[in-house]
Length: 156
Image (cartoon, rainbow, N blue to C red):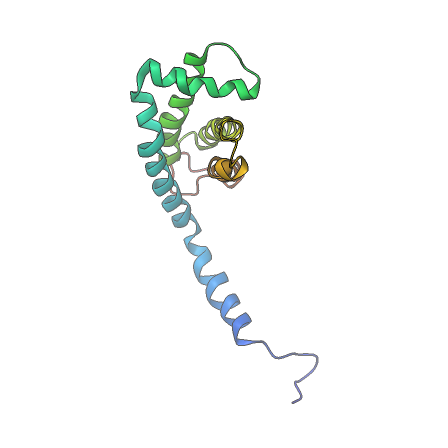
């Protein structure tokens, strides 16, 4: 079959991808970012953040011992409290899209320390055990550059 000029036939899959996915779904990008912020932030806040903050000094001390794997060997209660605040207040800011990038940075740093701690304390599985905090650290680091989207308090 001959086509006019140099035109090649377009496969139905390519046509679908270009017509539907690239044009239709990209207009929902900001809605997708809002869903990601609310769903991930609320889940992370309820499972990690609030529990650690409400745990008090004993929880902060145990949590703060993780910084020894980053070379910091003093004030574990302070570092545990800072991690708890970053996971609680940081998630609230993340959900709202207010001070979004600083919140992502704090969550990224907290997750890097958590990754180091899990990697060094779980000898049997090492990297497998640390994969969850590593994946979340990658996500929060990426969101530093992507931003909160237009449905946020910052709106930049």
